[in-house]
Length: 379
Image 1 (cartoon, helix red, strand yellow):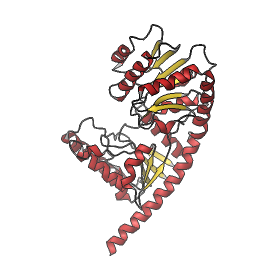
Image 2: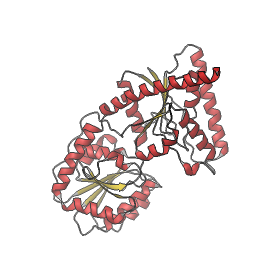
Image 3: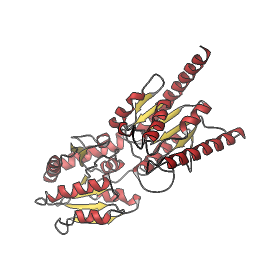
Image 4: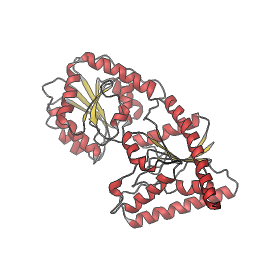
């Protein structure tokens, strides 16, 4: 099957490091592995940092021009796609192509990791939200990664629009190394970009939590960089000297080896979409300590591979971390379970089974949708 793969949030293949870009590449790899011909829709990024009406109108105009260009290519004999797959659209990055193209070609429309924001349905972002919601209704199948997203998509479940869970998964070129032997002083590690918003908030929470645990022996390695690094370093400035090592940004192929040289992965994950880094850390055998926030719980097994505290419960987070610091045997047991979970339950093979079934459901729903439309036209 010829599949057009669209990423309205970030242009496919721009090379920058982020979880959503990695997931996009993983989805394409799995679809290709199923025998499909997948062609990313290039130069079609529709992220809008502001709700400016002129900006939206400009994006809509550019999208209309892209659609007309595609139609011209098809009229000239280029084979059109047989299915349209959109990954990660929401009010700041609505899918301006998929609904129109799939209606024109009468082909299945699959959407993965879409989200709806009721609080954006009025006010400055209302027009953007209206576009997203029209696309949610037009989709033949929604693949959701977290229960939070499922709840937002439930209003669009219908006879011709299915919802199917696709748990976050992770792919490795080679089997990742197993965690090194435990160190006398537990080695904590975290990996995150240093930008404003949820990332900075999580760093600040982590700094406060660790300041309350200086009565325990531990070290922390921080991997990441960004425009807020100076402010984030200042948040950790009062911790005892020698406790924190700043690695900055390192090549992604070195991150896994760095993770494997530690004992516990600690990251609050305030309002994380889900966080592939949690799966990466578990794959090398690290137990996780985090908040049960956003989609974090979709990437771990609470109580088995991770200890999660309720979102905002900093004392509870501290107790969870203290428990792991004080119990080497528990760290070992949870680490082994974490590696097994990530490598055997959250791998491309599992995702492949789900995606194969998803495409079949989408195709059936499109046929049913077309049949309903034809029936309405003749009645």
